[in-house]
Image 1 (spheres, one colour):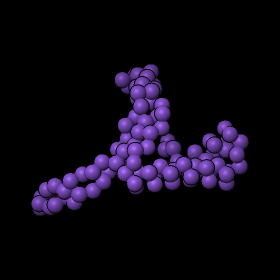
Image 2 (spheres, rainbow, N blue to C red):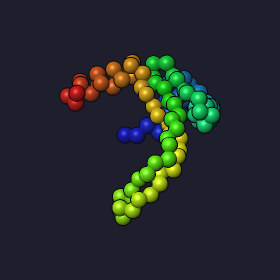
Image 3 (tube, one colour):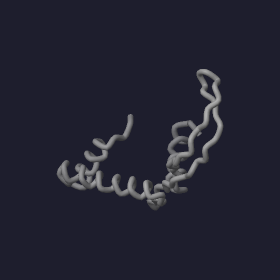
Length: 101
């Protein structure tokens, strides 16, 4: 199952007791702030969860996988996420409990 914005709004509503419109507004404010900081090239760090950062990728040669034609892959910015040790440990603990690790 995928965690969606609607699901997060429901969780905020249920756990904190805010009406759905207010819960949605709170979530939208948080997501917008994260997006704005990343657009500015700043890191976003949430203690105990992880860190998002923007990396610059240089232009480089590549190949079209369908035709084999050489192409130039343009320079771009990409968002990366590094989980905190706490999150990584929790994910690995849960995977090992299910016999996946």
